[in-house]
Length: 543
Image 1: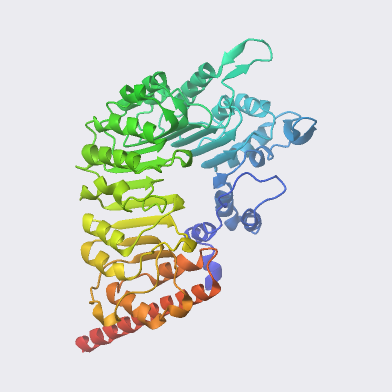
Image 2: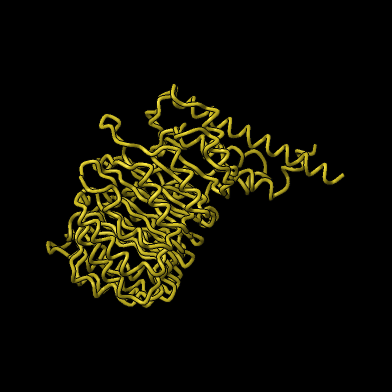
């Protein structure tokens, strides 16, 4: 009886159904509905109490528009010789049908569309006219439109509304022009896209997050979005970003709340520098592309009055910095232009400890070791095997005493006999970085020099330790000693997080996984004993 009453409380139902969200996925064929959708639909048919809460969760996030269109009896599937089966409008749109459509449309707040549509383009236009040119999704807040073969797809105008806060547009179209069927004259895609951007910006004036991506060319028109005064985050990724495109980009510098900007391009000429000026409110900057392009952008932003606290550099795999000189050049720009306020730094693609180089492992980032106020560091060296040792990690810890989070991910080739860090370096890291909370390492042997008693009890506050792979032989691991070593250094360690770090990685031997699980279980045992002892002391003091 108590359970029956509980299921009549709206807050409990809402919390329960929230555990059945649509999964992160690309658009599926219409006959392959996810199991969670079926569960929510079944719950909605149980009784009236369940119905409203289940339907709210079921319709909150959609990955295609055709389920919404199918609530209209006039929308039916029809075979198309060229495009296969498509939705078409056959019949009149009655008032009751439109009312039902609006009822479900108001529930949709997130729409993720991938690829071209599976319905006739005239359906949305007819619906919009039947509803008095109102937005079809009046409560939509997040719109993600990816993979369309045509960047100038005007379908988006029918779903954009003043409630929209996040907009992502991505096109894989390669042709720079469009030829109208009514005219043999090629219309430059740039002009059509300009008109599309103007209408989107007018339909969604309260945008806060904007992302424009054209995989084969630059998304070249940004001026209309300068009227969206609430924009806080802008992401732009495309082909060649020329000086003329950056004239449009500079219009965004007038936005008073724009604090995060991401720019990605394979080829960015030096002439674009004037386009990256007057972004005084900027606090986070992300740049991806070739090393030369990245250098141009960093140089441009270094002359700003903005206090950039977070910097991310992502070097494209085809432009990897195999030469140490290019890496040192970029790091010198970071040191000389951003070091005063920089706190968070991400570097993806640097040859840190590259085994194919005779240079010292940390030479590519040597200038960065002088930036003392870094709090979060994320390094990824995924293009080639790297060689990092205990001394390298200890040197990093000494250089950055204010670290709160340190992530080092690299490839390790055991066949090359490359040195791998061991647990012994953790003692030095814990002493050098007293504020460290998270440490994530790709490879580390579960060994340490000397006995456990040679390492002091530091009671460090680190809670998240992630060791992706261990190069140790399971037979050489003393489970009790490793667990005691970790517990002495980090008594607040999250043992479950530590255990997941190895058990979720593929290509790890079963024996290694078993040894790792035993270590984590032993750490949990130490923590349980310590907690019971504290409880006993507290109870004794209370008496």
